[in-house]
Amino acid sequence: DSLFLGKRAGEDFLFILEAKKSEKLASLAKHKLYYPLMSLPESVPHKIVPVYLRTVRTGDSIDFNIAECEPTTTNDRAKLALSELRVTKTTRLKIWLAKAT
Image 1 (tube, rainbow, N blue to C red):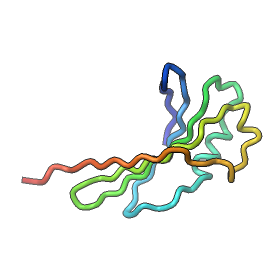
Image 2 (image 1 turned 120 degrees about the horizontal axis):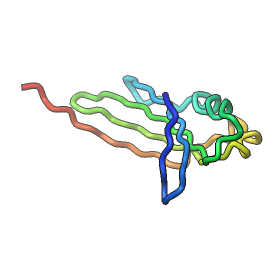
Image 3 (image 1 turned 90 degrees about the vertical axis):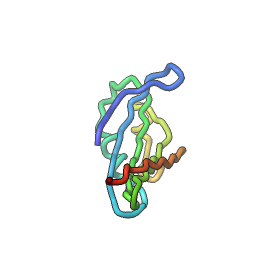
Image 4 (image 1 turned 90 degrees about the horizontal axis):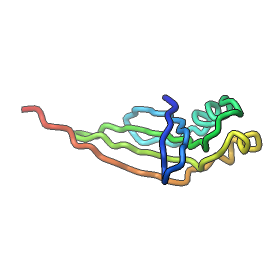
């Protein structure tokens, strides 16, 4: 779990990353992203993007399931309820592991 800065189309964003490893794909626990978002100081000058990453090992591969929430600002978050945190983009990636020889 971490915070990191990144750029998109020349604009700075602060990403809140919640990462989990599991045996199966499960639903997103929104409070895992909401509470870190609410704890940031109001002086953060960037748009904030909560991101949830869940990895699932399946045989010879690892699936990366990424859910990205709608960007918000520290000014907007005072009005943001937990139920309003919504996923706007999902990405699934697979990495194949090398077979043991």
